Length: 225
Ligand SMILES: *[C@@H]1O[C@H](CO)[C@@H](O)[C@H](O)[C@H]1NC(C)=O
Ligand SMILES: *[C@@H]1O[C@H](CO)[C@@H](O)[C@H](O)[C@H]1NC(C)=O
Ligand SMILES: *[C@@H]1O[C@H](CO)[C@@H](O)[C@H](O)[C@H]1NC(C)=O
Ligand SMILES: *[C@@H]1O[C@H](CO)[C@@H](O)[C@H](O)[C@H]1NC(C)=O
Image 1 (cartoon, rainbow, N blue to C red):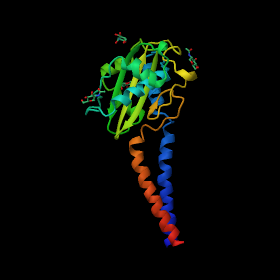
Image 2: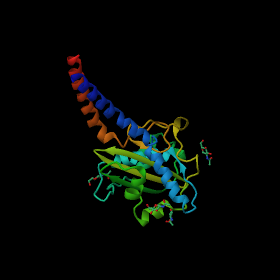
Image 3: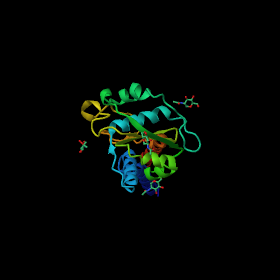
Image 4: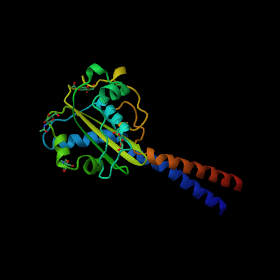
């Protein structure tokens, strides 16, 4: 009986350990890239050209939400207005964007939600839920797009930046396009794996609980045998 119980509990633990992994791989790795695809699909339904996925813009979008996380209002708005020069003086250097290639930002959309939403839901329920943002998305001036995402205290912050820059020659990243490694969150077009922006808020508690469970089961099962 004790033997069977132990086996069952180990099975449960394995299941708990493995399920987040399965969930993560379902997200195709990077939700920011998925949002870029959703934006491009929405534009192509209006016969608008595909926007180039710019890692330089994506990285700065992540910088934007990093600065503004913690300012989520009810109604999914981000109450945060970084000064204009923050882009050239802080965001670009933090990302390793080569300053002479800094182009014009032709629009931005930011939003937040008190829980993680799949990119398609974040698109329709948080970011592009009114006429103004939809017309901004469908503006003909844009050539490039970048998306950043970060989780903070169980809230999730998204930022989309648009630019009319020349593809592949604006917002160029140093170090042969790798830029500087971002430690938190995700951004589109990144050369680095997404550091699971959507799981950050939840994973700390989970790891702690699983850790205790593991020690507990280990003690019980080694005592029995
Ligand atoms: C975030 O909100 C606080 C309180 O309203 C405000 O003082 C602060 O300036 C905001 N942060 C930014 C970066 O705008
Ligand atoms: C498109 O964006 C450009 C640059 O931000 C702006 O000047 C223009 O008014 C926008 N066009 C429309 C139709 O909103
Ligand atoms: C584009 O986005 C808008 C706003 O979320 C939505 O109403 C519309 O159905 C979308 N169009 C397509 C083709 O996905
Ligand atoms: C930009 O660079 C990418 C990757 O090197 C390449 O696939 C793409 O064709 C380039 N686009 C243009 C317009 O030069």
